[in-house]
Image (cartoon, rainbow, N blue to C red; front, top):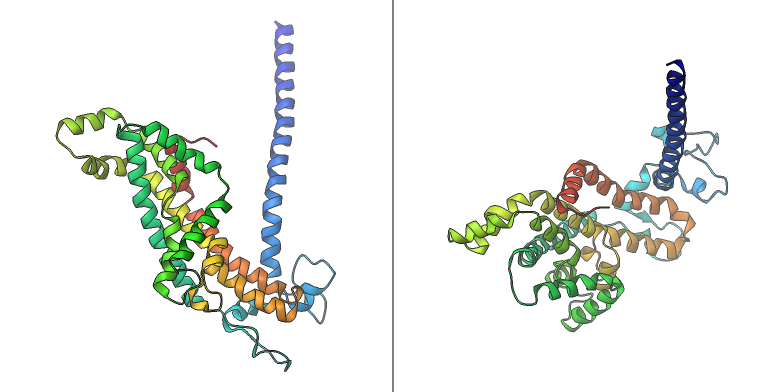
Length: 329
């Protein structure tokens, strides 16, 4: 009996040691991965409130310093005016070159353009994705599975190929770098109102809804469109919410396509992401890249922080939508 108790204690102690070692490696790996994400974000935030002399200094500092004492500055003495410079600009006092070292950014127009493009892109995407997902999950038409397989295969094509073909199409319609607001919006919206991935994403959710409900509705004389509106969309609300959130985030983050099709000379056509980069590019040409690194970090913060806020606010909805779709990470 005593020997059995001793063996049980030894086994328990061995188990605890193995579990502790496993936890050390597990949490150590997670902490290491978190540092790869947190450190660049922290550096971006801190650099955005540093003064120019500290940015161009070869000395590495983890917090903003006072230029006179060379000691860590109090938070209220940090260069918060860097964010104001993005809005009001930096006048050129050197007497060489143009009127501005950094022209003020039309944030009102940039935010309005981003919201308009994001709103109509999301509406168009939800409309096309819902109809396509319903067709591929419920309607039995000839060649459905073959067509769906071909559509999924397009996900293997690099995104740059679609950028080229979309650009050629938009160019033929005269919508590239136009001064017409309406055509500018169309060039930014139309190429992104469809999504193969979101169609697959929503189809997986629709497939989990029992087919018996659809058959019973058809027996009662319900049309496909009415069944879609009254049954499938309410039951897929979590997945649709995720698609809407991710679509808006994608529009906010868009840079490559808006840079191709918008007129950089007309700043009232720019979105938030590419507008800040365009404005800073002019300052780099006149002052050098290091002298406005703090402004670049401030601009990056303005683009990034709203996305983080949206993600943390709607995190539960996003995770619920992913789990309802049946897609495993």
